[in-house]
Length: 90
Image (tube, rainbow, N blue to C red):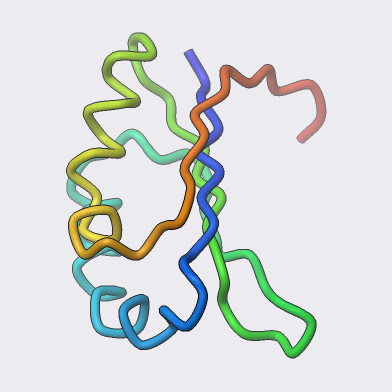
C-alpha cells in the first residue's frame, strides 16, 4: 500500500530540520519503505515541509513509521497527514 506523508514544518523551525536531517535520512535508508521523498520549499527556496511516499503493509505501519521519524521526534512538524496514494504515472 502506498501512503503519502505530507508534513508542514512549524514556523521558524529550519534549524530543527537541519539539526535532525542526517538522522532523518539515515532512518529513511534503514527502514527500506520509502519510495520517494523530498522537502517542500518556500518562496525563497528554503525547506519548509516534507513529502514522503511510503510502501507499507497498511495505514498502521505508516503511522508507526511517521511516529519514529527523527523529524517527528524532534517536534519539527506543525501538521502531518497520511493519505493512501495510487501511483498512476512514473
